[in-house]
Length: 496
Image (cartoon, rainbow, N blue to C red; front, side, top):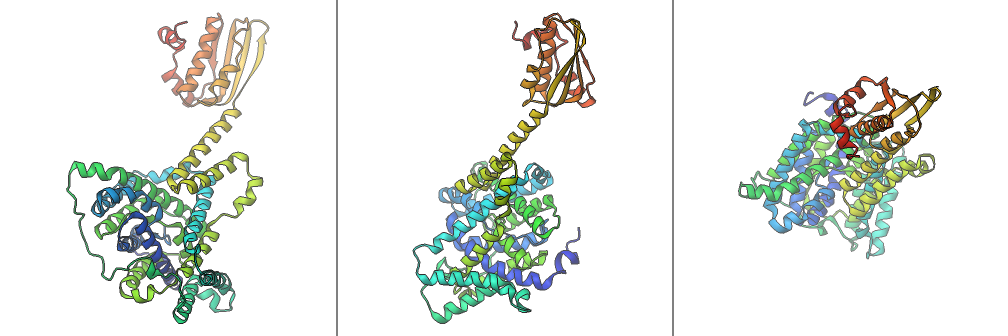
């Protein structure tokens, strides 16, 4: 894939430039807030957001997606920073990058196929709720000016696009930020601004190697954190890529994205930044503001740094109410409102998976935990559904002498009990034929169930014949079945 294909970089220059500026403005307070969560200086989050956004623009597999320092990652760093300090965090960030590159080469992104649509919907809804909840501290115990500014900001965001000509050419979130900043500077009202979040850095980032001893002890300290950061980072990035794929109706290279995230995190660690990943909120802002190509991500990173270092006097004047309005727009736009209507139409199992993903993610603030619970429930419901499709019918071939059982469906750990229960071992009969031409045996549990059926019939003095086994099932049965091995039979039946 060409590094500078015209379509991936320069097919939407105006839209990408304007959306990149909006994203950069929205990234600044988030990066500062996430630095505070992690217990590090604001510049660590800001430098990370710059490095990750710029590098991922070149190395990522999903054009138009924004990656930077994130809250999910920041929460995982708290203990490491508290107990060992910033240098160990930088070392863990480098190791996180290495693990993510390895994951990319192992093609672990293919595992996303096992994440069902209901889990993705639950993940999206949970993130929308978390994004909204993150704005609440800015809207509690404040003067009426903040509410007025926030409502004015939302009014601009939603009404500006309806203006003739200009409405479609300039992103409304950018207009909201500029207008509210001007209003604040002119009126001088007493409300929180970006400058109140923390001190902005006044120098460009410099290359630095983490000042930690390169030994096994250091590795044992940072490895558990690096694994968690790598997993959560890739999970959030893959989910966000899936959402951006849907929003733009274009495909993405998930394995390339894994490697790109790794390279970006190594770059961040070497520039004094913390680990990060894709950001669903900023990615949605970018897409809704007209960003589509890699150029939007690059501009977001570059403009972020230029504004923070060279225009900090102006940037620090941006009222938090303007950015709260933008993030509320993001949470409303991110939430899947159809999923509420679909609760009536969809089966109960799908609804339970979606709602459980939301509840666990919001309750724990841990995206990985929410997705894990969702995937686990989806797998259990699927196994239960498939197991119910299996049934065993029978017909008498010759009265009192021969009976044929016809097995239909999937025999595996969840259906093996029902499979065994379908046979009548007490019937006085000479021969039983078990027709398996419409059945499939998947695992050792299924083979053991077949063994038990055959052995129980033989113990009653009944001859058993298995017919119609397909090739794949025959391979499993031949390898693990023991009904023709007297010693193994004794062992399986517990010696009685």
